[in-house]
Length: 339
Image (cartoon, rainbow, N blue to C red; front, side, top):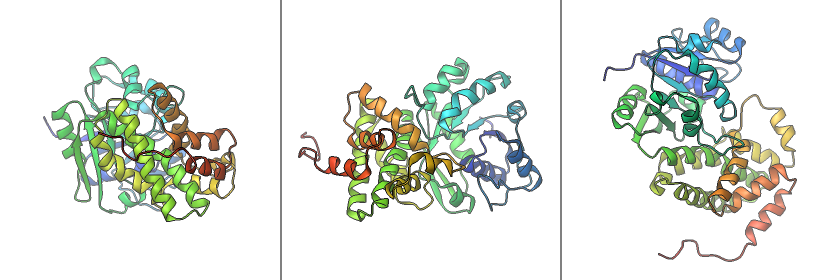
């Protein structure tokens, strides 16, 4: 296969902008689609995204547009980085702009609210059949600000086409951005989506000042929930002990740059969810994913008590302290099921 030289990045949030910057600096022709016209204009004129990635200088070669047709015109691949709740809508608008099948890499971390579908499942429902085999997923522990600053970052790229995954592994890698190949598309997506729900819970623990013991226990039992659901859905359980699983989980549950952890912390300190979200310009995917995750757990008959309590706190008015006490006072159990 010929090396990829041009790519469209759909979504100019912090992560989409950081990835576009990385690829433009590597020498690819990158066209970044922004929903907000003022964001596209600022990137083109000031070489900065002051709304979603403030203070980061972008290369002059990085072009932005608010037209999906312009973004994908002549591209050899698409990197899709919109929030999960608008993914289907944006995809419906971009599909008519494709003149031929191109590989599509999904960097969105979330489940579709209402259906509980993985992003690849949403894509397969909207994209033509000719593009299904070219679907890939990019996930792992990666704060946009640190990637933009050149901090070492490692992620994984999963897809069903081995040759295509290897090709785009090389396309995306730089001296500071290491990409591992993976083929567990279900597991990589679930790890990236569900860690945001557990990060909300970890933030609540920190907001309540329950201590590091409690946070460590929460992260560990949260991982157990993710593994249970993933296994029930056909994922390789080993995936959840890699970058897209425990790696992303630890980062999002402990990192000060984590939006989901911050939302949980503010709720733990007594703020209402609507008030917290009303002050944010960016999306905390865990809030929407929490409902979808509980829906999947019930559909697959999987016990996810932390996810259940997070839903009760977010949407049913349950107090954070009551949720914690209910988790702590559950019936005694084995940590691992007998083999």
